Image (cartoon, rainbow, N blue to C red):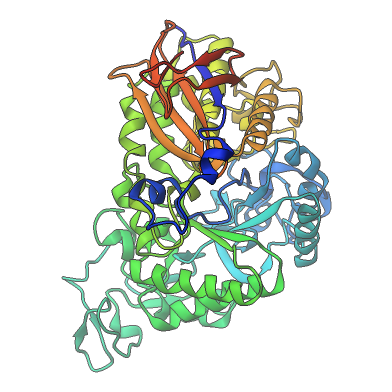
Length: 584
C-alpha cells in the first residue's frame, strides 16, 4: 500500500516574553547545563544547501574540448558519448551557462567531482577518467573540462550569485602508473612482508620511517618509461612514495595499504607525502577563491594523516582570510561510531552522513520503523568538538557511487506507480531538509533520475544522452526520457526542493535550530522532533508519518498553553495542552 508520506511543520510563538527575559538576575550566575545544551557551538557553515555534480555529466558548453585536446579513438581520447564509461562532453563552460538553473533550487554551494587532469584511459581501455578520480596532474584542470582560467571564471560567477564552490579532492591515491617487477597484484600484508630499510632491517611505518629504496617493498615497484614523468608535482613520480603492497580487499589492513581498484596508493604515513599533499591543496586555496574541499576515500587513509593534513589546510586557509573554509570527508559507513572519529580525531569539519542517508532511505522508502531514525540521531553527540558538531554534517539521499534516491525508491517499491514513487522521493527530501545538517542534491535527482545504481549506473547526463542503458531508464514525475535535455524548473521534484529551500530560509531554525526528538513509534508510523531557535526562543515541531494510515498523536513541546501554526504541510492552528503536548 502506498505510504501516506505526511509531513507537518508547526511554528510556536515565542517561548518567553521580552519582559520575562528582562527579569533575569544581574549579574547572571554560571550558565546551567540546560542553557549550555540549548546553545551549542556552531560553525559558520550550518545553513548550506549543496548541489553535487560531475562536470562531465552536467552540461556541455563547448564541443571543442570533448576529446581533451587528444587525437585518436576513444582509447586515446577517452571520449565516447555512446558508452557510459567514457567522457560524454560536459565541461566548466557548460556549468557556467547553467548557474541560474542551479541557483533556482536554492543552492548555496556547488560541489564538483574532481576537476584535476586525469589519465584519460587506463587498465584495458574499458573505461575513461571522466569521473576525475585518476589524477596525474594536481596543478591543472583536465583539458576535457576546460582551463584553469575557466575555473576561476566559474568561481567568480558562482560567488556573484551567492553560491560557494567546493572541490572534490583526493589524498589516498593517484592514477595507475606504478606496477611491479613480479607482475603479481594480490595484497601482501605487513606481518608477512614488512617494510625493509636500505640495510635490510624491517620497520613498522606506523611508528617510525626507515630510509627506503625499491628493494624495501613487498613488490619491487617499477614505472613504464613512457609514464615516468607523467605526474605533477614531480615527487609523485617516485614509486617509493606509494605503499606497493598490491590490490586492496577493503578488509582490515589492506583498506589502508592496498591499491584501490589498482590505483597507486600513496604512502600517507610518510612525512614527505603528508607535506607534499598539504602543498598541493594549499596551492588551490592560494590561487583560487575556493570555499572548501570534499575529501574522497577518507577511511582508506590513516587517521594521523587527517589530523595533520586537515589542521594544516584549515590554518593555511585562515591565514588567507578564509576562516570558514570547510573540509568534509567521504567516510563510507552507516555507523556513527565509525564516521565520527574523522571529525573528533581527524579534525575534519564534517563527514558525508552515510548513517542518516541509510536511515532516511529506510524510513521513507522501505517503511522501516521510526526507531531507524532515532538510532542514528541519538548518536549526534559523537561529532562534538571544539569546532564542530552534528549540525555541520553533510546530508544526502544518494550519490554517484551508491545510486540515486530515485533508484532506491524504485527498487524498494517495485509495484509502485509513478505517483507513489514521486511521493516517496519528495518525502525523503523533506526528511533531509527538515533534519539537522547541510543537505546535498545530486544533479539529476531534482529531475527524477533513477537508474540501476552503483557507479556508472548512477551517472546519467543532464544533457541529451546517446547511451543505450541511460535511454532505457525510467524517470520519476515526467514522461521525458534521457534522449532530451533535463533542466526543467517545472519538474515536480525541482519545485519541491526549491520550496523546501525557501521554507528553511524563511525559518532558519529548520536548518540549524536545536533538534530534539519528541515522538517515535516502535514500528512504521509517526516520527516527531522539535527544531528550536535558541536566540529567538521559538519552537518548531516537525511530525512525519510513513505509514499507510493517518494517525493522531500527542507530540510533547516545551510549553503548556502555547499556540502553534502550520508553516508546511498543514495550515492548522493548535495549542499545547496542560501536558505540554500538541495533538497533530
